[in-house]
Each structure stands twice: as C-alpha cells, then as structure tokens.
Image 1 (tube, rainbow, N blue to C red):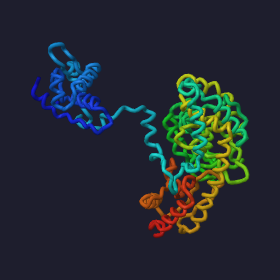
Image 2: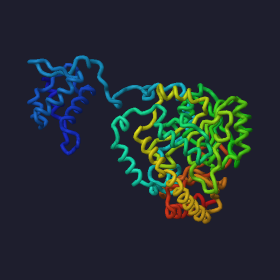
Image 3: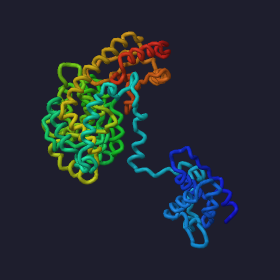
Image 4: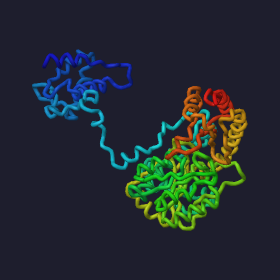
Length: 494
C-alpha cells in the first residue's frame, strides 16, 4: 500500500449524528476520492481490518462500503493481493466543477435553437409565492380551504384498489374527472361539451405548452395580450412561437392592432373573463371580432379562464368558447385558483374536430398528473364540495376586495386603485413620475409584496402601475399593507 493512500484514507471523517448510515457515509467518501483523483487508477486500498481500525468503525461496515464500489466497477478485488482502484478509470477521472479549467461559458450545455431564441423574450418570473401576505397575486385563500372534507376523501380513495391508486391511469385523464369538468363548465359557463373533449394536464402552463407543441411550427406568429400572462408567454415561446404583443383596452384585446401587426397569425392567446393583469372583461363585440379574425386567418384561439369561477356581479360572463360556432377556441382551465396550486391540475377543452389529434398526442407521449389526485378532485366535485367551496369563496373574496377598496381610499393621489368585478387581483395605476421598481422594492423591504405592471409586458406600454392580489390576505393584512404603502417615500415624494 502506498503511504499517501493510507494518509488520505485515515482523513475520512464520519458523523454519527446524521440520519445517513455510517456505511453510506464511508461509501460516499471513498467514491468521492476516486472520482476526484485523490485515489488514482491502480492505487491499493488498506486491508479492511486496517481501514476499520483507522477510521473507528466495524470491519463489516468497511466491507459493505467496498462491496458497493466493487459492484459499481470503481474498485477491483484480487484474491490474495487486495483491493485496487479500477484501471478503467485511468485518464477518465470526473473532476468536480471548480477543478475544471478553461472558460466557464464553454462548459454550459448546448441548448436547442428554439430555447436560445426564446430566452431573450422570457418574462422574468421569480419563484411563485406559497405564503399568504399582502398583496401576493395568484394565491387563493388557503386558510379557507375545507381540509377536513379533502382529507376524508383522500383517505377513502387511498384505501381503494392498488391498481386504481398506483397505476398509470387513462392517458387523457380520469374519466370521472373529465365528466365532472364537463358538467361544471355547462352549469357555470354555458359551455356545451362532451367529456371526450376534455384533456387533463399538469396545470394550465402544461396545457399551453402541449397546445403549442401540437399546433405551432417554429416562427409561427401568436397574438398575445400586452400586458398579459407571463406563464403562457414563456410556455409558447418555448414551443417556438413568434409572439406578437397586441394592445389591450377596457374592452379586451384590440383586434385591429393584432391585424395591423400580424394579419396571418396562427394562434391568439386571450384572458377574456378577467384580463391578466388589467382585470377587464372582454366585450361581446370584441369577442365576435376576434372570432371573425381567427376564421379569416384560419387561426385558433387559446382562452385562458384561470379564475372564471369568481365573480362579484349577478352572473359570470359566458365563455368565449360558448359562442364559438366554428371550432376555433381551445378553452384552458386550472384548479390552482379554485382549489390550491400544489395540485398541479388543469385541463384543456378542445373543439370536436381536434379531439383525434389530441387523443393521439396523449396516447403516445404526453403524460398528466397523478391518477390519485384526479380521483380525489372528481369525488370532491361529484359530492358537491367543489360548488359549495366556490360559493363561499366568492363571498370571502368580495369581502376582501371591499376591504382593499376601503383601505385604498387613503392612498396618495400618486396611486389609483382600479375596480374589478371578478377574480382576486386588481391593478393600480401610478403617476407617471413615480418609478414602479422603486415602489415594489420599498414595499418588499417592509414585508409587502407587489408586482409591477411592467413585468407582464412583452413590449413597453405608456401606463405604469402595480398589481394588487387580495385573495390570500385577510382584511387585517390588507389594511396593514395599505398603511405601509401610504407612507412609502417614493409615493409621497412627487
């Protein structure tokens, strides 16, 4: 045995306070020495009795670690001679990243052409929030979710047959959930559809990505609202779309602007029930205008109804899909807002003429969320818990919105909160002399979360502002948050 090898091996430190077993720690330490080159090809290890004595463990522990490395081919045992580092590792040592020379940029993986092109236009999205506070957007009232009902349904389902709970499930989604969704859409949105038209996805963004992958060729032009939903923007860019930012006014997407910029478009992405992030509801004339433009261009429309269950008027506005007579609209929904985000559960409702194409995609390579999760949601809907929850949440969000409106009346004139009739976010416009980023930064330093209007824009717009989420914040949180904003130096200095 080389003296150097003995010195290196005796330096191994094991921590018996860790949950990881001593045997595994020893195995990993020896493996790292081999991969880093500290033990070179052909080096002989000490005898197992010697090594066990040096590092203070049992011989059985040492044998177990060495046997694992022999099984991996990193060590070779020779009867009567000892245990050696495999010669096949000579000149093939996998050094750790800091030891590599050369330009760091040259070590980056080679990305696809589509992703390289898309990166320059990606919306900058930080990790989505999971802790409620004022004025986080996109997060529902987790404190009001009926966890007891959910737990009982979960336990009941998980006691079922293992094949149903643990198997791959139906490619396009659990039939019971697709039936429940079709029934829900008919009752809430006036959409007449068959469960075969419903495909279950791992959230709305997964649905956007699958739609783009099926329908877009690289460079195809896609209308997208500006400002608009950043998740959809990134998903469609990743599928090779050339996004065309289309202006939005108080009636929704300005179709004439889209026709001026890209009359030969392939897709249009809209949020007609509650524009993201401005909150407008698309008017009926504008909806008909968009459908006509799609028909003339032989294009398709993605309707994102991300929070359509929550409205504060007498009735929700019908879905764009419900007035589509030509089969141009693909309707995307999600349970992230109506239930909770970690479900990662959404769906896409496709026109009859596109069912076969989507069936083939889901049958061959697309995969959806957990079958168990789908089954629990289906039962939650079938037993009436979902409808009850939605009704209660409408009342709760209306109360929180009213608290926001009342508190916002005390804000400086430099920040004007806008009204909304649905969802659980609303924008506020800033005086042109106030910097969006400064307000966001100052608020964050005092524990208040705001999103700038600019982060939703593919191309700059003339209006600056902020987006206020009120769904996950209690009235007390909202009042406290507005009090903090009221005293911000940036809002007071103009």
